[in-house]
Image 1: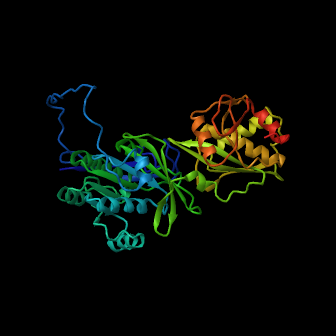
Image 2: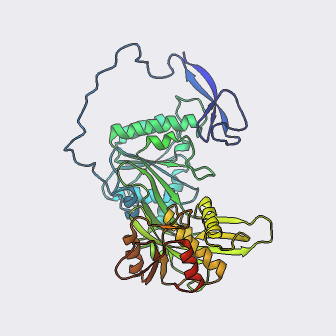
Image 3: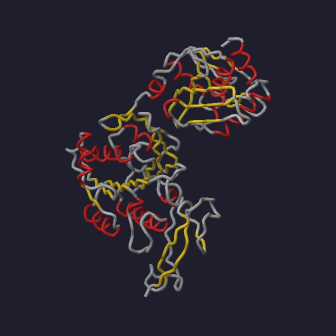
Length: 454
C-alpha cells in the first residue's frame, strides 16, 4: 500500500523545501512554492534492483560505420533549417514561447505538410477543443491534410492511443496541461511536468517517433518548469518576437542533431506564418536613412549573416538618475559601452537618458554588436547621422580597443549583396565589393563621426 508524502516544491526552479515559505531560497522567486503530494512505499513505483546484481551491458566502440540519423523534412524550410535539416526519428523537441507568438500555428503547418507527404501524424491538444483546432486549420488552408487529432490530458490514455496509432510524428500542445496518475499533484506543477516529460521522451526513444512538446514560458521568458525538461529532450527551440511586430524568430538553443544558435525568420500573416528567405532586407525595410542615432549592424545568427538596424536616442535628463531603456539587447552591455565612451573617449554622455532599440523585434546577443551600438549612441549625442550605405561590427574592450570578431567575410559579403558600399570594422577585415574603414579604438570612431569622416 503506497503512502503519501507532502513536500513543498518551487514551481520556478524545482527546489524542494521542508515547509512552505514565501520566497524560494534557491532561485529567489516569490510565491512560487507549492505543496505537492507524492506517493512512496510499496506500490509507489518500479521495484528496486539494489538487492540483486545488475545485468552486464554490451560495450561498443566509439568508431562506427553507421550512417547519420535519417531526416524527415517538415515542408517548412525555416523550421527544417533550425532543426539542422529536418526531424530525426526518435527525437524529442521542446518548443517554447510567449502566448500568441505562433507556436501552435507553425506546428500545425508542419504536421499538415508531413501528412500531405504521406506521414502519419497525431496532434494532441490539452488546451483546445477539436472544433477550435479545425477552425484554425481552415483559416490557414490546412483542413485538407490528414492529421489525426486528439483532445486529452491523461498521459496514460495518450500513450495507449499512440501505441495503437504508431505515428511518425506527435505534437503535444502543451506539456503543462498533461497529468499522470502516478503523481498526486496538480497538472502543471514541477512533479507532473517532470514525470510526463520523462514518459513522453521514453516513448519517443522506444517507438522511433519524433515527439514535439509545446511549453509555456514564465514572465522571465524561460520555459516553465524545472530545467531538467530541457536536459531530457534532444532539441530546445524558442519562439521570439514582439506582439506589435509581424516578425517571428525561431531560435535553437540546444540541438543534439544540428547547430545551436541557428535561427529561422517568419512573418505573421492572415494565412499563418510565412517564411522569410531574406531577413536582412525585411529588417531594413522602412528605415530612416537621414536621421541621427541609427546604425546598421552586420551580424551573424548561427550560420546566417543578418543585417539589422540599431536605433539609439540620447536625451538630456532632468532627473538625478538618468534612465537606461533597452529593447533587444543586453542592458549590462549597454552600461559597459556607455562607461567606455565616457571614460576612454571623453564623450559627455552621463547626463543623458539613453534609449536603445533593435528594429524589428530581434534580440541580439553577440558582442560584435558593440561597435554598431556605440556608433548609434555617438551619432545621437553629436547629432550627426551615419551614412546610409555603411555597416558596423566589432567588439569593444574595456580599454576602448576594437577587437576582431568571427566570420567577418560573411558579414561584409552580405552587406555588399544588399547594396552597402562602406563598412566600419576591426583591423584585418576585408572583402571584395565594399570599402572597409578599420578602427583600432572607439576614440577613432568618435572622431570619424565628429568630423563626418565616415
